[in-house]
Amino acid sequence: MKFTKEALVVGFALFAMFFGAGNLILPPFLGFFAGSQWYLVALGFVISAVGLPLLGIIAHARLQGGMFNFAEKISPVFSLLFCILIYIISVALPAPRTAAVTHEIAVQPFFDVSPLTTSIIYFLLVFVFVIKRSTVINNIGKFLTPAILLLLLSIIISGFFSEYKPMVKPVTKLPVLYGFFEGYQTFDAIAALVVGGVIIISVKLKGYTSGVEIRQIIISSAILAALGLLLVYGGLIYNGAMVNSEFPADITRTQLLSGISHLNLGSMAEISLAILVALACFTTAVSIITGTADFMAERIHKTYTYQTTVTIACILGIVMGAFSVNTIIEIALPVLMLIYPLTIVLILLNVMPAKFRTKLVMRATVIATIIFSLPDALKYVLTTELFGDVQKWIPLSIYGLGWVIPAVLAFVIGILWQNRVGRKT
Image (spheres, rainbow, N blue to C red):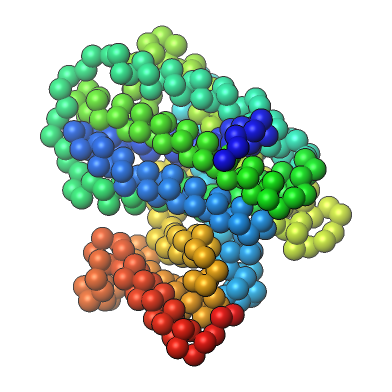
């Protein structure tokens, strides 16, 4: 595996695209409640927030296309609907959340302005950054990511040399699963589908035409980004665990992050954290809106499709970004419980050898996943006990994994059936 200069720039850009503001506030919070079990929570978190995104980018490198190619074999219509749903979710939830986090941590402590004002200024800057497509990846990889990494490492490393009270007893039950599901909130598996297409297009815009060369650059950059995420997430979770006797149990995510920064950096904490949050938020919003605009430009071959999509996405970001971080997270949960299992399955299917990615196998696995992930999602939006009763009869459903066994069974049965009848399409 060659780690060229181009792969380094793209890897830096990938890291910044994955590491958004939500990814900054979630890991310390996990460690805070996990205490001495922080490594178990970290394991679950890394599986869903690092492992799955890495596989998603590797799948992109193999397909060398956009998100549409992930589900195209199932049905072009299904793939189109899936893509539209993912992009709507991305533009309506994680992108605006970056503005909300920026306001709460980077703006509110210094300026007496409304969330709406912050959201307007924030997405105007995003618009300026995104509107010129050819420079997006270089600007993120060469300028924004090094600043993010420097600030992150200053917070994490200083925490290892600080003295705190002994950790209190962990309150986290099933820590590995807890970390795994909290990894959903990073949106990183979904982000892999979105930004993977951005990376493919960006590499091609630099003049690379060989499929082998493009694949090498993408996979190398994905490995570099994953290693960076692994170190940063582990460090942040451990920092949260070390201070779990320093703060009250009802502390919010943003308050905990601010508290850790003050303990580790002292008088420089507020300014350093504000810059870090603003940069981490900004790169995530840029990648989401760029990916959405790329998709629309690919589907609608009109001169101003890209620019029009960027404009609409930024306007939606302004509106949704005026809500609080907790409100956006609460809205996102039922949507994630439905779309995340499907995203995971599509990523896993697309990294498998071709004989396991036939139309029959993919259709059977995806249908089973959708059917058995519905109860997990609907219980958050409907008051009826019906779905609670249904879940009792589905293995692993009480852990939010009711779709896993049906999906595996559908996958195995699909392979056995196709081998029997000799179908290879």
